[in-house]
Length: 417
Figure 1: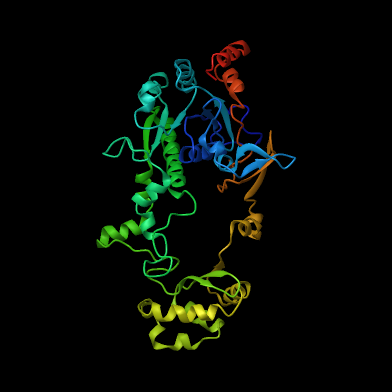
Figure 2 (figure 1 turned 135 degrees about the horizontal axis):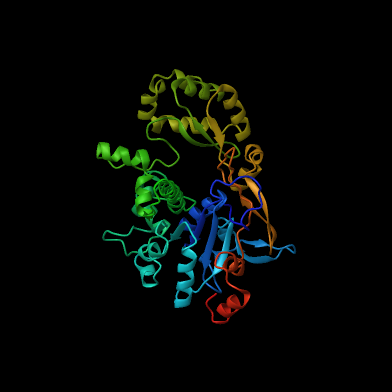
């Protein structure tokens, strides 16, 4: 059955029969939980009384109320907690631990990103919760996994981007101005770990539905970062040569990079010799196609240090929009480098409805990014704003555990909630 109080939509929900106990905070775990919530799961987000998820304070910017004043809801927190119900519980207190074990009995999935071994002290580890819910799917997210020499280290996205090789291939070439390693502009390792965790949870639920067997999932940021090296990792394993940084250029294709126009930047991605010829003809430099030094891609790769400055000078002569019009008409792959404001003003992004407004009890409404998953029968509906701290504590305890108002009031008075 669909859990009440979670989504206003009357459309069928792919995970409407699933309840998730979310003990995670910051980004990787909450990103996984938000995916599950968008797909219809009833996600109960457990937070510390008084302060809640660390990211609630990671501002500015904050959502603003009707008067234009800051609320207490940081935009960072809003990005990863849509569609959940917030319940405050003091996880360090014995009563709070017992309350969470009782909630786990009514849940299909547990997500957590505590340090290795920490939840065992509270009786909230996999083995403890398996004893109260044998078919539970329990997903732990840590920096380095549950075993190995680094298991007890704290893991942070920035550190893992460096340790896991991503920064070694991100950034300008060392021999060019501004050269050196760079992290990505978003916390890519956290987000990808959340995505892999989502896949793992869904696979485990499918297995449980077939066999009745739950299981433990051990997700590590470093494992994820190594896996998402993809072809870069494969190139090394099959050649023994560590890839280098190429900035916005390509190691094997020229020109396949950014160029500065008269008023901005464009990306030009010529995948073959014909597209290269059309590019330089559009720029009024057909002799660069006829030059024997640059006739084929291997020759252009070999001669990139001579050719690219000539192309850069050519591109600077025209404004960005003129270049895009010329190259699109010629069939040369190209595009702008948009800032985030330009992204949300883009006609395709607007046509796909990627920015959404959701009603919010403090801000009136908050503007968020829609889940990109499109399914015809069970759409991912981003219909409920991220909750206020403890917004659903009483609701969940009444609905899921059958607690009376007097019992809930007593728990609050004892500082458990």
